[in-house]
Image 1: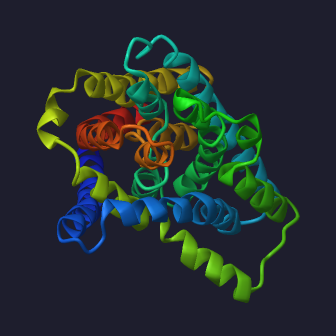
Image 2: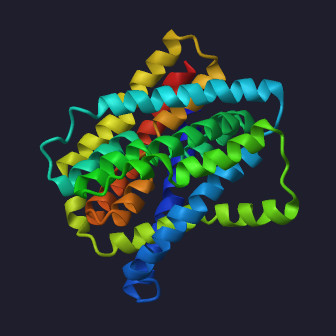
Length: 308
């Protein structure tokens, strides 16, 4: 089982790096440059992100039992993010302001969509995907509120209105009522939503690749703060959650799905947010790349621990 999880994690990271490489070489060839990717950041931020959230609600089976399970998984997702918020408070406070928010964000917010969902499907099947979908909903609420605060506020960009009204909360405000009311959108509406939602990962990775193209990769392996981010995100936070779920006697399948979500490497949004708020995209890119690579080893370990 450990080797299977190791291979599944490695495969997802390799796919991620291939997509990044396309953006990297496209930038070097002048086909898709960093300037163009910054324009697409707004497309990703304001249109695709809320549609991803709406699409996730559309894909969940509507039943009283599923609603109860989804609620429990969402509650666990809230616990993961609240503990993450508290955990990062003492770290990186003496770091340069242009990088402080990046490191804090990368330490707390994980790639629970692109990394956690496929692994949950491989380990637990559709039920694991269902549980992790609840965490994605919670992730989007937190990252577009608290996440905007810790990254956007670093250069005076914090705005309380944006804390409440943003792509994450708008997506939930549309998707959650549709789910609770049992509304099935007609195909003519649901199909465009699904088509745009699937652009999320490839577009984010292409943008990521253009930022990497303008980054000094030689410094990636020497950045001590990136290793500290890896320690917090890949080891400390997941271990706290694995122990906590065991103490709370959370059902095994749910506990494993939540542990997969908690142990995912830093979110791609780290880079997207850095670009959006004119922060250090080089630092964000190097940090996410390093943490993702290290997660090939750490994620299977955490999954194995949650399964025992």
